[in-house]
Image (tube, rainbow, N blue to C red):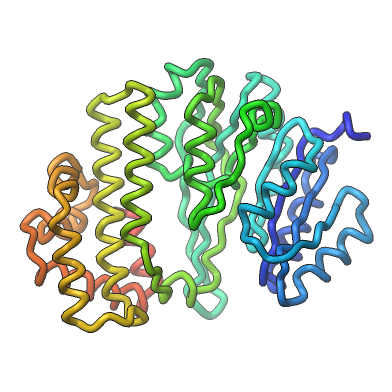
Length: 353
């Protein structure tokens, strides 16, 4: 039986009892049947683990591992060591996938002998009263048969947010195991894991088809959360990106502009994080923090290189270019207001940036 497993689906579970059933059922509904489903209960305090056990009792392809809480990276890494499939797929326990996802991606992987298959995805943002809006993240079909072709075109995938997350990808198990690639035990582990994947990947297939539904259903966590250390984390991520492109020896204008625009968009997000109502700094401390962030020489450099795609992003960038602490602070307050009071408008602006 082990030799017939085409895809190992791996899913960490923690405090998702409202959503995990739909996630599991979306895998059971796959047109590809030769899969195993490794679910890791990461010490969840709610009924999520019990719900997974109930599904496993009725489907012998589902295996539930219960462990003490250690975070999603440790849960995924534990399952990687146990997985027996030709390819790995990583599902989040509060999302769901279209029925033909695994079959289509597996077919592409075998057709092109791909080490990595990248698909489009949907973001479903719930805006209240059972209503939601869907945004599409997609690029045209492409086959990159070698490192050079992939590297010079990677900026297109980064630009559409297709290389950051694990759940829109099928990974060749052999590539992961032979290169000893694992999720790092860090906050926001998806991006550094995928950086390690693409660093030396040779064969990549991209499909314009969309399968995965990322749910922004919990508006409290999405719009109201304050994240301490967010600015420092974004700075670290930027360094990873720059180092990756240096290792690749790819420094063409399109790639440089993507990196700069990515940085400056996230910088504005970091400033808004400071003005979040749940940030316990005083107003004076917030302005001081923003002034410190604006003084980073990297900000001026990236702002000069970036070419925003929308008029409102061009306007938002002006206070940053002027290094005006007051205007940047007021702008961030406006963003916070829209983010917390009008999720629909905020989502439209974010997607259209």
